[in-house]
Image (cartoon, rainbow over all chains, first blue to last red; front, top):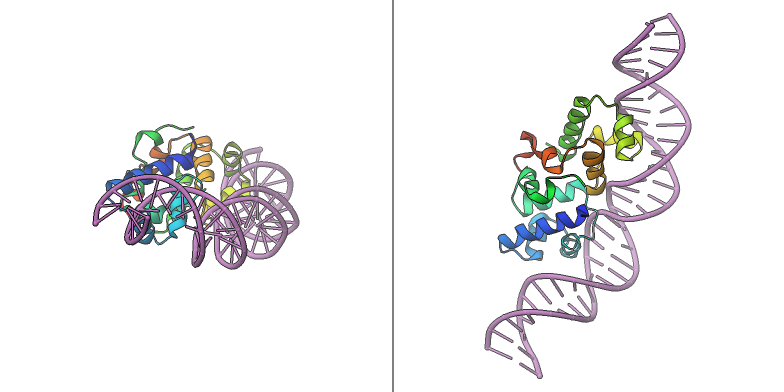
Length: 76
Length: 76
DNA sequence: TAAGCAAATGCACTATGAGTCACGTTTTGT
DNA sequence: ACAAAACGTGACTCATAGTGCATTTGCTTA
């Protein structure tokens, strides 16, 4: 599975857990609202700095916790 | 600490564990040798696709395992 | 019907990462 | 000391990441 889609899926999962809209998450993460939407649809090859902003500032989890799910356990 | 430097540090650590040169790792990861060098010096805001190539194809660990160290445990 | 919100899409634009090069410096082996 | 291998750097082009606005679609409630 494409890494972009895995990331997308995980962001959406955590966002919804927190009851945030895409816009609210975008605001917390300091990225554009439409950009947030693109990422969550798996359309963006996001850079590590923006990814960290979304994970740490927006979703308020550590990188470790973000990747600590089945889809990231195996290569390829 | 800058996320780029954390990534850099972790790549170097795993690369040396495996007795690989930057060039050998670059080759396995299908990126340029100098690009590999830039990443390992924390000079590149690497995208998730290239990061995955280096971690999964080059270093042969999962994303989870890559981030499963102290420096990635906390936000900020 | 309509109003209101969230999600999604399109377009035009700017900023920056990807990828490479030539060259310089440091380390390693003999 | 010397050569060869490994590492480091700055600058460059080109593709695309990332921004900002406008519009649309879908869902919900009145």
